Amino acid sequence: MPSSLRTRNFNIDRYLNRLVPPSPLHNMPYPIAHFLGYRKTPPKDVGNILGAIFAFIGAFVGLLAIAGLFNYTSINNLNGPVLIASFGASAILEYNTLASPLAQPRNTLLGHALSATIGVGITKLFALSSLSHSFSNSLAFVPAALACALSSAAMLLTNTVHPPGGASAVLAATLPEIVDMGWAFVGLVTLGSAVMLAVGLVTNNLMRRFPVYWWTPDDLRGEKGKERDVEKAEEEGAKVTVTRDGMQVPDWLVLDVEEMVLLERFGERLRRGKGVVDGARRASGASSAQCTVVSSKEDGGSWGLAESSSEDRGLRGKEEV
Image 1: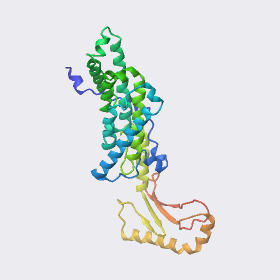
Image 2 (image 1 turned 45 degrees about the horizontal axis):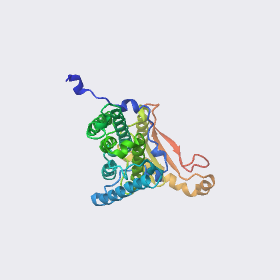
Image 3 (image 1 turned 180 degrees about the vertical axis):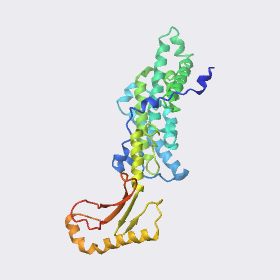
């Protein structure tokens, strides 16, 4: 084997991530974003007892929903199986191993769809051969094995590995009801995967978090977005704020006695002026009085004093140095 193949990797996300926008979840109303997997702070571990209860509820409701959809709607006219067996394996992943990459939406949806497509395609190709009768009976395991092998390789190269997808590929080549369905099986598998995902978004987010990501764990904001975050963090950390109620000082900044006395004087002057300006503030809409010491980038990092309030209009009710 050439030595170059031993160290060579193909990462499809290097090309796809350029086309995928950053996650919009942080801009959505929090109750909605919560059930789509977004958290402001990392969730606490619920333990395996509660985890087992939620896994039971998710698997039961998820498979029940799929069975009801397949058997009590027009989908039943396809004469497919009561329930596609590979969904049982997906239920274990999606409702138990919530943080696993194998259980994330991209892997679940695309892993099943890709494998089903390969399974149906391989089966139809073998059906065109002169030995089609043998491959549909005594040698059905040949297209099944080939379909599973191709699905495994395809999922790995597309970062959509979902083990139950291999079962979908095998079913497409071996189960007569599914073989007769043809390409409709791909749509059926994709629909069932979407139903399981929808159930997971509800049951898994009651006390846990799912999904951890929708497309990739990589940062999709690009270099400009990362630079903005760094600049924002630097600006937030280079500010001393004094209000009537106290002061906020960055953790890295150590003040000497004279500086502490000076800031306390600012606070005292703001408190003394409170009674005088309360009436005017209520009329003007200003809600707080404070002075902020900020670092100036233009003058080489020297310190200056800036005014701020919750609303920059009317009487500010604060002291400026």
